[in-house]
Length: 171
Image 1 (tube, rainbow, N blue to C red):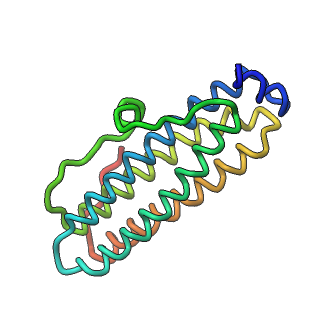
Image 2: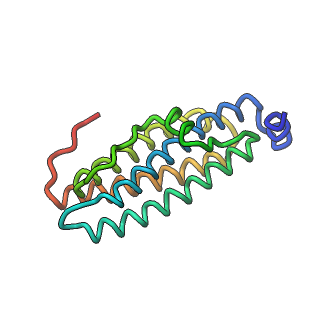
């Protein structure tokens, strides 16, 4: 009942609010899978760039955490519950987990850039139906999320270019 009440009180169509909350829960699940992967990479990075990458992954981890909070709060504003368990995150994410093992910086850069790019592509699909509404808050949230994701795609792919990493395969 809270979902319908909040949607109606804020001028949103309840069916739209539900569809958006479901879409944002997929984004939230992707962010959590990414968060765990970054932690895994932070702990298991090896190689000549260990110190720099270890520090940079801390920064990325904190930024992902902030984005998680923004998305979860929007889901609550829509009148729904954000996903909250690892089981839910893994089940709803479009991304895959990474095994615990040593990772070189090249592999980490590729995997993180690839996950952020895939999540950005997903959000562009969500953006299509959100832009058909007057929901400026969600339009801004998606725009800011895309800026965040694309910034890190740029950072990590720039690192791969600097290191003369082989051309990234097209998906």
